[in-house]
Image (cartoon, rainbow, N blue to C red; front, side, top):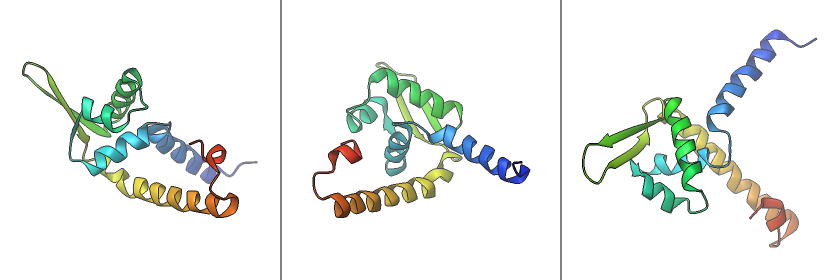
Length: 123
């Protein structure tokens, strides 16, 4: 039998993971965290591996969840800027911690397996 309170923790963890899960969301969020605001084209240049369609999709999901703010300027040509929302700033400690853990993990893999660990890290 599963302890109800532990099940609740898992549900809460799943809710958090749903917001930041995927290959691109944490990277998008980290770029927005390090820059006050970025235009779509700046995000695309910062993450060259992401497709335009995927970037649009990920930004929409983050905006829907109130993690980022999308500001549209009424001008020609159109200008749109993205930034972390006030609510989204709460993810900063998590993102910094994840980056730090990732750095330590890559260093550990290098210590364990040497320079040629590209298959293990996916790079």
